[in-house]
Length: 175
Image 1 (cartoon, one colour):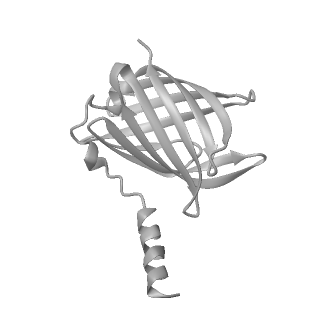
Image 2 (cartoon, rainbow, N blue to C red; image 1 turned 120 degrees about the horizontal axis):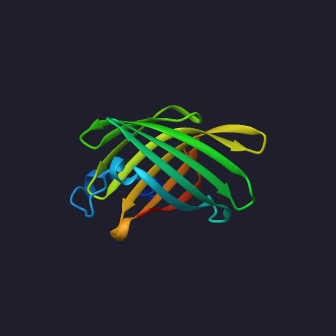
């Protein structure tokens, strides 16, 4: 391979890396405080697109959050467009300085998150149900609080470092 092609290949690899940093959102408003937003009732609607952009699933989530001192319990009830139902209960520890760790039955180890300004980045490994088995995938969630209590979530899902899809969720806090 000549130097010209090597340079193009290197440029393409570098340009494909994710350089989004939570620090970029430090001054963005409205301020997102995870425990405030999810304390109480929240509704959400989501989509899963595969890595080729094909819509694979749609779903709705009803969430009840309960704040107890430095811990937030999120009870999420999912209903998918094909009628399947699922449930995930998160136990999120509030560490201070807008840093968090969380656990759920289908999460491998614990999730870690940090918020700045209107954004929160939440990373974890999940045992994803696929037909009659489970595969371990990596989630890189980015949540962005907008005006009127709208929270937009975009999660990149990877397996062995390869993007297998994107989950997009819109949350609306019940008034």
